[in-house]
Length: 421
Image 1 (tube, rainbow, N blue to C red):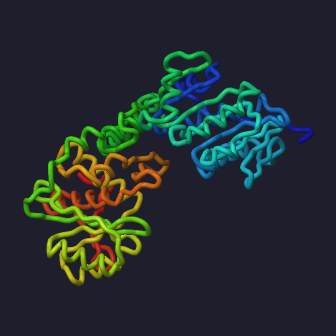
Image 2 (cartoon, rainbow, N blue to C red):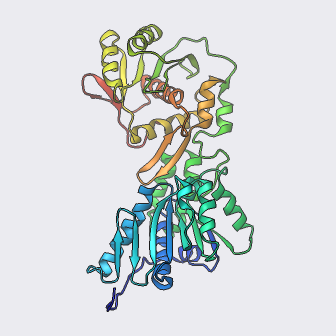
């Protein structure tokens, strides 16, 4: 890259709290931040400036995210910024397969996932960003820290708050306590509103739409005690019953097995107390017969996702009061937020056991497209899904749920942008 003309690179303008959090002098700055508060943009500016001014041939700068595809989001943003400043690429180049951008200074920014920590050892790194740190493995942080040893490189550890049981939370508390070379900062949605990045009405809408613990973590950067559980451990405990209710069942929720999962049937009475709880694995023929025997003519809301669609249609031909619910990221978010509200208000009851255990291990993860609700890797959420369907159908039967709309051959889904209320 000889004879490089003068390039003017316009970095994102940072608001004061954002600048203080990311561009401070501390070697380790830990930033617990609201979604969309500018933490990523600020760190892009910081790392790019480091590589631009401190870079030399052979010097590496790292952007680490939970997975490689997430890390490449930052790569695309930096690439766009450089393309606008230098469309001829006289002062930079990129390699998409290996995921790096090299600047005229010789500094090279790498974009890596933390899902395989063993791949992060060995290099000397002159500055690093750990993005979505609460979702990165602790072993990855150990590897990243080792790469900064010889260079004494600075690092920015950023992300949404996600409970208290993770290494990033512990690092934040050490920084907050004032340990040497460490700084702690918190950026909230209100800071972003004050800076003109977010609209106050959008934050108010999120507060109305989301469970309280989810809102506090994602928008106020305040940790819950439940490690990302959307229901709350105390709220789950408050809903525990000594046994199944013996009152008449008014509605069922049914989650159908897929691959190694379980078919689960939950029945509720008119007070939304669990009356029926069945969980099994078998072929579709046996499953269909067992479901028909259990629901015995009563209303049922059944998972119709994927292979469940023809099963629901078959059930409908034999039983007129079966409705289907198609799980997508959006519809699952809606129905789980409805279940969360019901649990936190003690509007549902169930005995201790497999169902309560699944509720306790269930978690939410913030993504750039919304909130994703799932069981942790290796665990199941079939019982949680069946209970959520049963609670939703009870509300529908009582006339308090959103209006159903027909989809396909008599299979219905519930359509409400803001979830179940």
